[in-house]
Image (cartoon, rainbow, N blue to C red; front, side, top):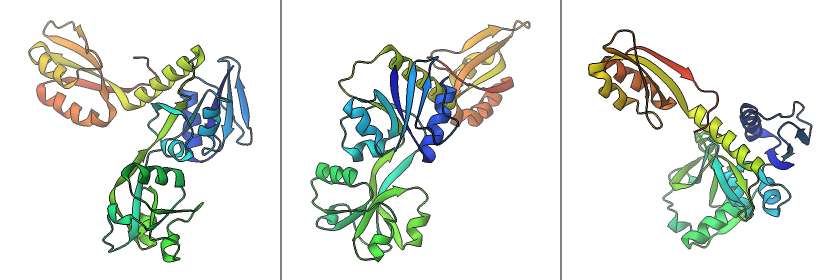
Length: 281
């Protein structure tokens, strides 16, 4: 039976459970449950602290798991990213008091507070800068004001919390993180793991794309298909009127409104958009 680690709480947990349900797997209905066996798919799910998942997978106790890219790097565990899941996105940045003139290079010798000491230590080792890493479990933004750090390294979304603490970001992002599926580098993939991977890939792609259908005259067909090339090629079917064609193609969800406008301009009509719930490509 395949053993899979899932975050037990927080935004990663909710989104992971939703994705697994969309992929056809049973999931717990009580947040207090620590395990769940999906007998139909021969999988046992373990609900664990997101920070611990990489350690369990690296040890071989669990074959695969869902965690954050930042948490994998911070753990130092020997596990490999297999698939980016396109949720739980965050950016890891440096921040210091507003008006500072810090750059990453002149952080040498400075105290950097963070809740991700492994990630930060790894980053500075990679760029060859020596700093003092101050480990905190939370409220990292207060560390500069309270005098225990000169700057911080933390997850940044809108930056509102930083501004309230009198801080602003500087330099390039340390890391762009998101939820990922991980496994041990030396692990032999079972059929169950391959199936899980294909199903999750199908959900990721289905969320990123939509189906667009439209009718277009033959004289405008090439121009329309250039706008909707699809994954391999659009599907084209003749209509009852000999000079008209029906076209179907997959299109990036983020581009669909622009593409609909462009299709209309080149002569397409009856343009319809449909969600994709699952796919295998």
